[in-house]
Length: 126
Image (cartoon, rainbow, N blue to C red; front, side, top):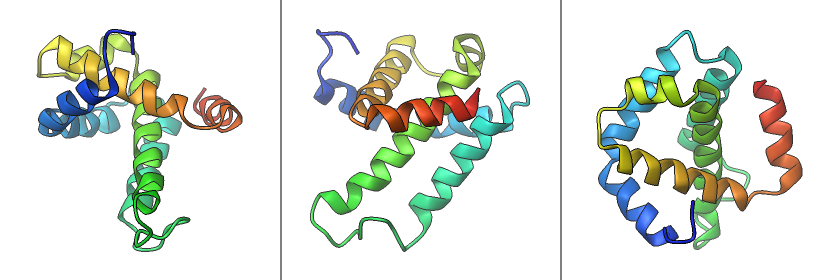
């Protein structure tokens, strides 16, 4: 995410592109060129978000939903980066600037996670 693109702008772009993002993720998970570990992590993250039991209970204001958001965003970032730009572009149906905004948002959210956790997860995918 560059200095000119604010987090609010990225959130707005991502919210408008939810159908395209879901379609992209579904296609990436089914694409055999994407590493199996990245696809498994994406599936596990979806399962975690869907489970009624969380590490941080959802009834806690704000922070209760942040763990779901962080897990989902980080898993999507791993999936997109493991797939590579060429495969992602092949599966993306929307405008390129929307994809750039989405990946910028994922990078921004991932940068909020502890560095050790990011490096561990990225190492698992490789």
